[in-house]
Image (cartoon, rainbow over all chains, first blue to last red; front, side):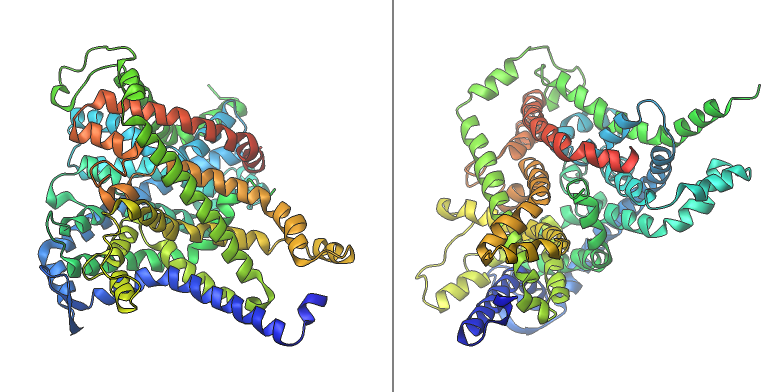
Amino acid sequence: MQTFHKKGAAKYIENGSMLALFALFAVFLLAPAWFVFKGSFENISVSLGAASGGWTLNNYIRVLSDGYWIYVINSLFVCITATLLACTISLFAAYGLSRFRFPGRMLVFGSIMGGQFFPWIILVNPIFILFARAGLINSQVGLILCYTAFITPFTIYLLVGYLTTIPRSLDEAAIVDGASRFFVVTRIVLPIMWPGMVAAATFGFLQSWSEYLLALALITKDDKKTIPLGLYQYFGDVQVDWGAVMAGSVVATVPTLLLFLPLQRMLVSGLTSGATK
Amino acid sequence: MKLSPLMRDRMTVFAMLFPTFLVLVGFYLYPTLYNLELSFTDITLLKLRQGGDWVGLANYWEFLTSSSSFHIAFNTIFWLTAVSVTIRMILGLGFALLLNSNVLRNMRMTTIARLILLVPWATPPVVAVIAWRWLFEPTNGPLNRWLLNFGLIDDPIAFTADLATVWPSIVTIVVWNTTPLIGVSLLASLQTVPGELYEAGEIDGANRFQMFRFVTLPYLMPTISVLTLMSVIWTFNNFVYVWLTTGAGPGTYTNVLATEVYLKAFVDLRIGYSAAIGVTMAIVMGVFGALYFRFFGLSDMQDKVG
């Protein structure tokens, strides 16, 4: 192609400006995270907010001994339980939706797709009242139920998409051989769709890990708080303990970064698949 | 009695979907209807037990005629949604085009770029807000120190407290956190543009701008539309960015619909009134949801379970 064989200064200028633009993008995308990472290893005076130089682990030690590890444990417990619940529910739902024809099937799948976009800000009031009456305020059970409901639509959607890539003949053969549906799902389909399950679980975990609104409304006791709530404990009315906030932020973000890496391709294809047909 | 195969299948499906049914009804349908009911009452957090009295459309009337509603609606629609979605679409498209260009592809930059995009994408919104609040911090934040050192400003800027900078600051945080999804999705889409389309364009003597305008852009349009619609729905309802950056302040300057729902319910304790705002939001978003289903959802459903 003509344009790609352009010679001389014009090409250098063009390539150079594109690289410069790329560098600019990279700085914009990385700088905020870098400054938090860097700040988490600095001595930052609480009253002045100024760094006094030198590297230190004090922020991490202070934050973790200060009870931040309780938030980490709460978050891990709530999010892992909700994810496991949601994935179990979703596995069977996705199989049922993908392999059977029955009246109301489109309605159920449509509701699930709509659920992905459902604004939880609207559900906060009614759920708060219902939970208050049921004694589920400040309860991890309540939060787990909410998070399960919160992530289920997308995990079902992902798994239904994944199941379309698995040939029906596979499970039908087993049915002909007299296997029960439960056996087919757990022993034949599940092993094959393991990558899809892992993606769904990762996604569910990440969604609940960074959830803030429901936790804010439903949890007020310090020993029940999750990481997102715990982080904002360090924002006082007058001053902010920046060292602690940044160390806590790094602790909160490392798992998401590690989990996100293998997930991103799958998420992208799942999100826009309706548009690219 | 032996069941017919059809009946047995129906029972199996019912059992498999029953938990999902409970979730959909218990956490989506019922709370939504209950919220609708609450919106017609004057229930407050203090009289949860006795419940509220029926007030008809009074909450809606009060919200739609209150002096602050226009300001809140404007903030939500213009700043939080329109501005941030437009900027993120443009930046996302720009980044995707840049990465798909021959220069960067030849330098094998795509993998590095994916890793770079991953950082803001994987950062939970609560942490994204913290990162930027630190950058924006007036006395010691990196951005102010940098601007002061280079002599670009004489006094530090209180980015999230100054009325002139607070909305651009919030928009920056939203854009930073959400652009990677757009960038990665559009890049994936760009990589599937059939080469013949460009060859045909070349035979017709199209220049590079025309190639973009008449080949690339039309090809990307479905993906751009679906991403825009999803972004609008997610951002319009978003609570955390505004709440954690400014707490709807200074004063109520950056108040949006989502923070107003929370403030009315949990600070003013007026659950009924707050519910009415929520229902109003749901109606507005219903329009966008319907557009999504009309143009993308239905064909997607056909592909998945049709």
